[in-house]
Length: 459
Image (cartoon, rainbow, N blue to C red):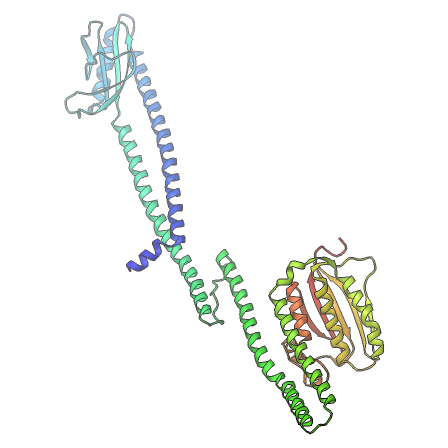
């Protein structure tokens, strides 16, 4: 329990909750002080008005040379105040007490304060008095401040208890909220510990309320998904390298052994050396492609991004490969809207490599007579680069697998290639924040790469 309490006290959410509680209580105290002062001033003003009004009611009973009515009125008011909450005093010019329930002495004209010394009245009782001259006599009317002080005490006590209640509620509520936040932060920390220990399938639990912690947790989970995919890809690449390069390496070994045997017997080994060279070139190209994909996925090329026209890139690659397609018995056309700008942020060299890989993939795996079309089209705030053909296409169940490194369809194993062309295309698309999809054209295949536009098309 003590460890949990120490952990809670040291947690940032709880400290923030305490700071918020302190500020809230401070604001409550300040506002309460202002209200108390305003109320106290208003009570004092009302008390003075009541005293002055009572004084006027008594004083108005005096008629010229008729002091008896004044004395009677003062005594009547004094008798009505049995508890001496109100005091009345009438003295003549010589200071002789004429009427009332106390004798005022040395009180100035107007409002004043004095402490009572009367039988049955606590010695610390304060009175607010108003004195004035009525027919040559001194009339004093005084009201006790006990009710006002009692009311002020009640207000102060209410504010005090309210402050304690709010402080306790703020601390308790802050502790509850902080503990909930801390549990979620602990979940994030626990997930990261699991990941650091090799459990790449660990994910931060989300509560689904869309708050900032959920948003950050979702981003961390997305990064973990990406990390897990990369690690799985590395494992898969390792397995694929061991599997797919085993055949060319064995073939290279057999060629070299044959060359060694022929050399020992004095025969010509030039053909074996040529074959060995071709095999080694193919192996080197495979490793170069793997390294290139790794470099692209690391994001180092993003520093070279500039605003460029995707339509110009596609049109240039169409012009380059048009003659190659004709020589191979196929046709290649690029349909780019003239005078339109298809602006994106990217690396021109990588984008040309991506389009080249898609075109070469179509040329390599489609039969003679196939028509290949390149185009760029808008779609909302995105720009699409399209490569269409009317060849045999790719089965639906294989369309995601062809982006895996060194993966090759059974029908394409007899054709040249390493199975890395579309993996490189996917890596370049991911680097540019683009999505890539393979769609059936009945017949043929449509490759659609969707880029975020640097500016709305036509803007």
